[in-house]
Length: 142
Ligand code: CO
Image (cartoon, rainbow, N blue to C red; front, top):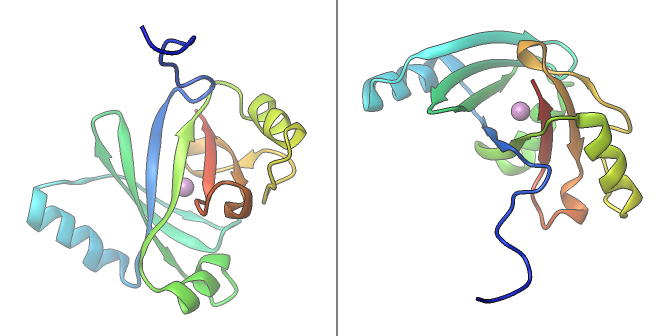
């Protein structure tokens, strides 16, 4: 036996999705279809983020393809600096508010002070990459 703890993901119950920034959503969807035979499970315009998304289901998780539809979208600004590619990881949690308060209390910098509505009617909150080892983390409560 090594260590005092058995492996546990704690308040993270699953990988909900991997968010990928793309310049042409239709082309990206077509590519996943052609390469892997994967089809879109859900499409949505998320107005609060200024993005169009297409979700491709992989087991119990999703690939979230994201294209900004306006220059004022934070994702558009991100892509000006970083281009296309992996943008964030969405971790599924049972209670977004509870986990958000807990990480804030432990000093994590957050993008969202309070949970808000995400795609598919989920409740979400983002943690700032500055205090999470360079990864933009999204907490997702279904
Ligand atoms: Co996301």
